[in-house]
Image (cartoon, rainbow, N blue to C red):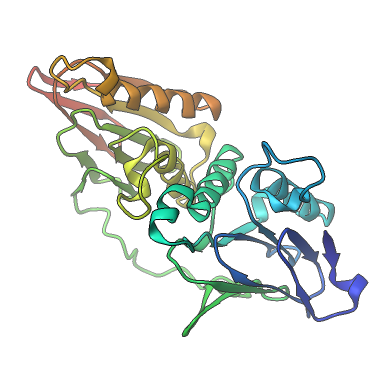
Length: 349
């Protein structure tokens, strides 16, 4: 169901479960209540001052009976409809700010560990947006609390209310940008070495800095560099997939399927573009000591990464993977040079 503020002649539009609304009325407000495992996707175009909100229940429409639920009940069918509604108002994808709220784990813990719809809702959305080169501007997801989200169309202010707390995740855009500071706040003349541990990621825009991993066994380091804006990033993930993982047991950056999208999103926030990003991959060694392919996490880590990048039309520029040796990788942010260190010596990719 799609609602429009002018058609209703109302200042407040309430979006129910499996509904969405779009408005270009400056005085209008769109709100949805009591988000548990459901997700609210909020869009706002600051150029045209158009806003929209979708409240979906489930990650995928696959297996659903035809007509049993509307398309807006699912992430895979509802999110495209939400963007299409914005495009019909004249919005362009590159101008749209995206906010995500909800995805809580609302069941008893034994049930939540197996049927955590909230976590699956969040993961499905992140993958979908990543595939379409759409960055999430701000989010308030997970946990075990109910939330209500509101967007004011005139200002783009997105506020979240939960028991005992109310805060803003999408503040109004300034009328004019502040003047640039006379002195850069970041000291680019100071060399800095940033260490990325297992299950962590870093993105750096200081040309004199370098990013390094720890010792990589079966873990994989994904090093990104944009030669146009000279921004570098690195993710070190430990496992191929977050499926079956207990909520909160490991961060999203510990898994390829959830960590890689987060790495690219962090690069996009620094002004990088997918088509100019260079990708280097290091690690994925077989550390099982002959236990066999079944437990070869390194090989599985590499396979899933290649699938993710191929699916998103991203090429690997260089790699040093497999084998049975531990490696450390160093990315020079200023030049993009990737150096791999192992017992056999240093190698530049």
